[in-house]
Length: 632
Picture 1 (cartoon, one colour):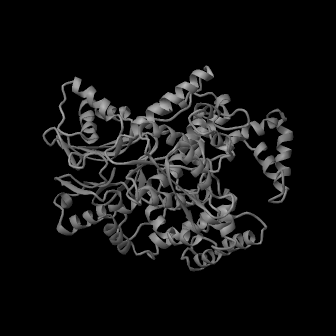
Picture 2 (cartoon, rainbow, N blue to C red):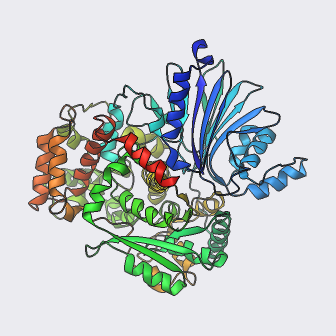
Picture 3 (tube, one colour):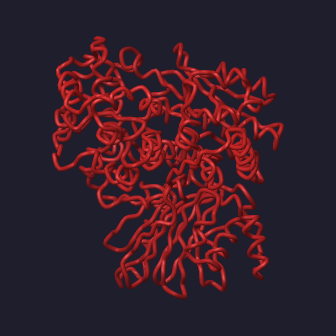
């Protein structure tokens, strides 16, 4: 696990970097010391420059990077883990390959030599990779199939840059805000990929690799695109298949030379992983966080679960004061604004876990793959609208428009009379376009969130509505929100997070589950619940999904109100946002006229990001210095 910075030089001037340019590159690499506090390395030749940070999980000496192979033909930096490296290594040995290290790093580059870009399809894991083929003067790069590990790129004047975090690509003079990204952010609550909040900085998309010869343009290629292909099958056989593939995935994800722990909430996903992990390590430690506000904590359930499973549990209660106090650090780590309040408890649970382990397992991806979100039951609740004539449905839509906000039934009519493709953009949706016009002074009518989702819906137009929703979430929400916060909040504490549900083999099973085995008997991920029966304690199986709830709604009225008022007042975003409209949202929320908490949080997190990355009100150098001392 690590982080890296890479550069393919452009101009003849930069073929031989000066002392100042080289110093700047080193500083870019040291910005991400938290991703790799154990080791540092560099490689430079006439065309490329690589910088690397490493968090040692398996054999630090043999895993040192940049890694060279085949008499210096290849140079590689690699962030992530390939869990099936032992099996791939055996395959290569049969072809005559020999190995000098025990790391997955050497296996990755050997696979590339043998199979070229087709090697990426065979990797079972999470990764972002840069490979420089010195002989053929070509740079290759790839990102794992779901986007667990990040990979940014920027086309600069002096070269083509790549990095594990966007902060390593920012120029000293600052970057321009991408107006399209901001407009989409206000709807999605995150910046949808491949965009970032800064112009000219983008992400390599999940399941993609690129090829960049020295004398040609960069070209991106898709090697994996997640699709669902339901197959009717025997429920008992499918249950057993899910159990087997999950036990296998958890086992392979526990390969490590350092202690592996696991996050534990009160839900099925994390509990299933802990229960299975205990079979491989009976002494596994688990970690949970919660809040004092009633109804916003699963710590008691997690403790009960840990006790019944016979595993050690460490928990922590987060106060509103420390929640806010840590927000600037959290936003600095995120790189782009993210308005998911759950990223903060994830930051705290990672902090607690780091005191005991270097690696944790977590349940990300289960909801997207197995149909776990409550909103996936919506097509069933709205099926009565399918038989209503179009003319009458149009009339109901007009009625819904004149019903005041907050009146019971308005939302039901709106959803029932609006096609899925026009209303569903993923598991979270903040502002509609008409609302953004009142808030965003830079709003452009030519930009709408449907531009991002329309091509996705077109690909699955004939599929079941539940599968369409899952497909949208896998290609937007999962990579843009869930995996972003998972990577950044754990890496903020130099902690490696592994996600057994987002496994190549697990997905091959999950993609074939029919809808009637996902949404059934009044529940979501029905078949996963059946597979968990006997593995997970009963008190977990029948609970209502809670996740990582945060009492933002209450706090904005009370404990965090002064903070929110001050942030709005001090923010230098007046040329971008209409502060009067935002203040009214807060006033109406406090008066109980509407629950504006999530919309307010979306705006407030952008303002906080703006303070850190545009107004430079966060002392990054001081923070980085403290981080280096803490991890040294």
